[in-house]
Image 1 (cartoon, helix red, strand yellow):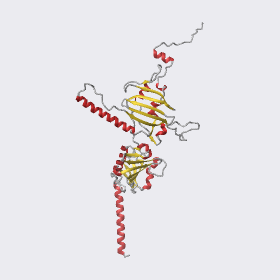
Image 2 (cartoon, rainbow, N blue to C red):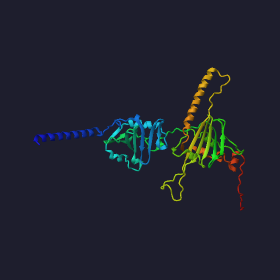
Image 3 (cartoon, rainbow, N blue to C red):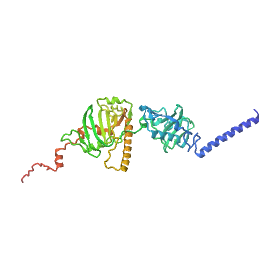
Image 4 (tube, rainbow, N blue to C red):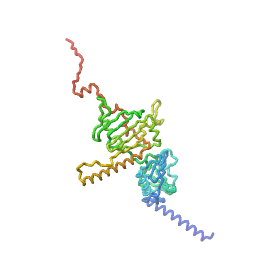
Length: 408
C-alpha cells in the first residue's frame, strides 16, 4: 500500500469520526434522541386502521381477542358477544394518531425498565401487547404499552422499531386485556312497571308474592293481602324503578338452560305499561374460594355477591290508535304520526332486548336486590308496644319505686 493511499484512508476515517461526533453533538444540543421517530411525530409512521379486522390484547394473566364480523365487532372469549364499538374505534384512532412527547434511545431489551416485560407475572411489570391484524391475517402493527410516565402519558414501543422507546401523549386507559372490559354495555331498560311477581327461592313454580298497580303513577297493592298485611313504602319505592337502565358485570359462557332448569333459581315476571313482559331467572353464582392469604383457619370464605341471570322479553303493542269521536282531521294526522313513531320506538326496543335472550349475564346483588326480597320483607314490621303507644298518642305510664323517709 502506497503512502498516498494510507493518507487518503486516514483522511476518510477522520472525516467519518468528525461526522459522528457532530451528529452526537447536535443530538445533545437539541435534546432529541437518535431514534427512528422523533418528538411531535406519530409513534407509527403509518397505520391502516380501516383495514384492521382483529385486535389481540395480551397481559400477564388475561388476554382478549376482538374480531370484526359482518354484524360488527365481537368478543371471542365471550362466545362472540357484541363488543363496545366506541372503545374499539377510539383505540384504533389513538394508535393511528398518538404523538411522541419524548424519545428514548433504547433497544427492545430495555422494555423491562419501562413496564414492558413479557415474561413478568405481575400486570404492572408485564404491560399490554397489542396486535392488529388485517383480513388476510397479516400483521398491521404490534405495539407494547408499558407503565404510565410520571410526566403524563405512557411508555410505548413499536415492535417494528428497534431504535427506541417513546413516551406518548396518551395513557390508553381502555386498553385492557380483560374480556369483560370490551363488552357492549347495552342492556334491558325496564320502565313504567305495572306488576311484579316473584317465586320462592328453591321453588320456581310457586309464586311467593305479586304486586300490581294501574299505571306508573299509582301505588302498588299486594295480591291476596290479608287485612294485617301492609306494604312497606320504602320497599315499594325501590321496586318501582328496579332494572331501569340495568347494568351487568359480565357475560358468562354458561348455557342458559343450566340456569333455567336449576331448582335453586328464582323466577321474576315483570309487566310494563307499554306492553313489555320480562321473564327473569336468577341463580346465585357459586361462592368463590377466598385466597389463602385472606382466609384464616376456621373462617368461612365470603359468599359471592354476583348472580347469574337470563331474560326473556315479549311485547304486545296496540297497532291502531283509539280515535276520539269528534277529532278534527288536522289533529288526527298529527296524532297518527306520533302514534306510529311511538310504535316504531317500542318495536325497535323489543328487537334490541330480545337479542339478550339465550345469554347468561352476571349481575351484582345490588342490581337485583329488590327482587330477592321475600313476601315478609315487603311488609311493614309491627311496632313494639311502647313505640306503638307513643305513635298513637296514648298515655305512657311510668312506675316509680316507693320512697321511705326515716324519722329523726
